[in-house]
Length: 75
Image (cartoon, rainbow, N blue to C red; front, side, top):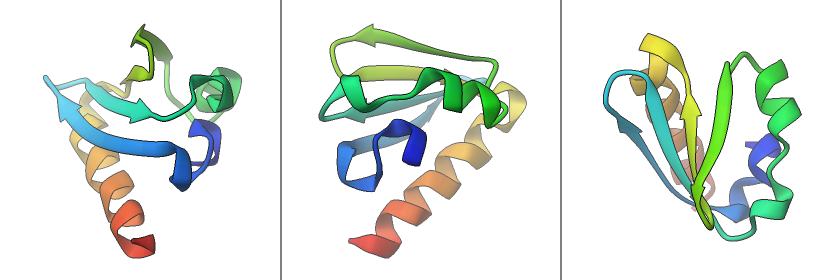
């Protein structure tokens, strides 16, 4: 979550298809693509302002679930 600008910057997380996680953020300038790569994600692409697709491979569903659990725990 830190690489996405922290929990407070993340508005929505959902798994897409089999290999991607869509993340909507408040401020894209806080997204650290290099940190996402270091965390094991092969790619992160801003598909529209504030909307990112994280390429997570076949673990996309697990990534999405874990991210949503973390967001729910701080809400």
